[in-house]
Figure 1: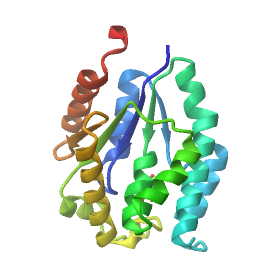
Figure 2: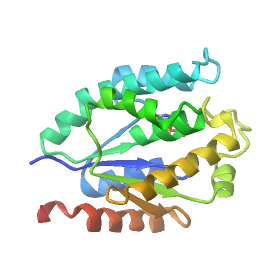
Figure 3: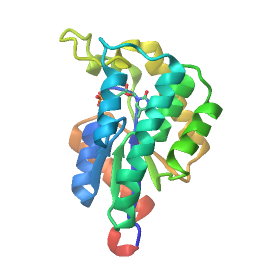
Figure 4: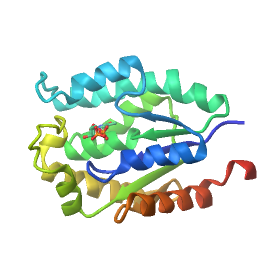
Amino acid sequence: MNGRFIAVEGADGTGKSTQARLLAERIGALLTREPGGTPLGERIRDLLLDPAGDAPVDRAEALLMAAARAQHVDAVIVPALAAGRDVVSDRYVASSIAYQGYGRGLGDKPVNEVNQFATGGVTPDLVILIEIEASVATSRLGHDLAGSLDRIERAGDDLQLVVAEAYQSMAASDPEHWAVVNGAGTIAQVAARVAKVVDTRIGLRSER
Ligand code: TYD
């Protein structure tokens, strides 16, 4: 029996990484992330997100995200699912559609094609979109006083707004695979919403 594959998505500052971790703990899933998730992928992540690094052009950014993803799919995601383990990934293909396709303006079609090649068509059973008001996300990200924002987070509010809209339209056009969760409130409140969505949408393990 294959495990379930759940991707957690959202703009920066939505609390998505915390929710991905809590979900994985609750259902005993393997928690992984993108860009990253493998030793090679984590090195690509450093190249992509280092604010002091040599900034890739937009197409290079999309291809590096996809390269890290290809490694992630073959080395981590597919073996875990095949072994019957559930997988929770903090970001997956939809991040590339939102950030590179819409945010960078490369277009959803080419980014989709590159990712089809990268993943071999491995798609999540459920994509959870954590959504909060843009102003809340911006204030959570802060004003980079500590210099802690990565290169893409530093691209600013306009990119984050385009990304949030792209996520909304992806969720609206594929309700069978997407679930939108309100990210407002306490961590526990949001976690309870995520838990409910997962249990009702793709079922408890014992029910499968
Ligand atoms: P993330 O790990 O969510 O940020 P944080 O370190 O704050 O938890 O993601 C890092 C950045 O990479 C984020 O700004 C979104 C971006 N990203 C893309 O642009 N495309 C992608 O395909 C992925 C996976 C991430």
